[in-house]
Length: 236
Image 1 (tube, rainbow, N blue to C red):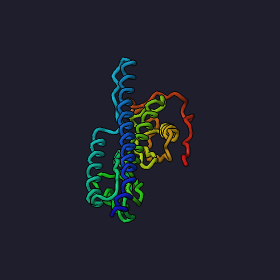
Image 2 (cartoon, helix red, strand yellow):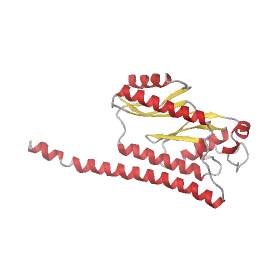
Image 3 (cartoon, rainbow, N blue to C red):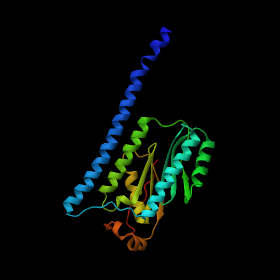
Image 4 (cartoon, rainbow, N blue to C red):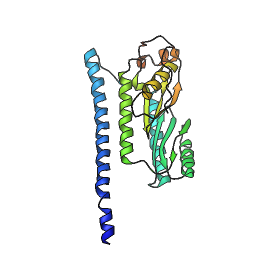
């Protein structure tokens, strides 16, 4: 009994240290998110105009995506019964699944469950089979997402609100209604952010004419001639 008691003691400070690090990373992520908001508001004040965050999806599409996420998340939670760690992100009714599940069967069932949700167009199943990620890793992913978002805001060639950014285990997933040039620029910028292991794009592609006619209020003024955007950077 004494040996068991003594052997447990060194592990407790280590576990406490990991929790403190995770909390610190999460605080940094939240702070970065708040700073982004200040940056946007500050830019608007300097320009003398009100900056409104405009989504390229219709209001109906945004509401549908929220409904899909809530419905799919609830059904997957029932399936896993407290096991695993799954995030559901829907953009324009195209669903991205990230995280971890205990078995390959759970991964397949999760996809089937989401595909059966009304109005879902497609499912990108990026779930990993294995133990759930740690609180510290999830905090790092949240912080990484905020850094990619900040990089998009800082890039004059990108309209940052056109992109939905999801990070899982250092892999950044990008969704959005974008042109080929916007897709290339966003992929390149995201890949250049320190800590990003890989960039996966799941875009709904639109033409420059569609951007001009249907999304004129959410288009970014081009800084470079069409076709001269950097090529997508492959990340190991």
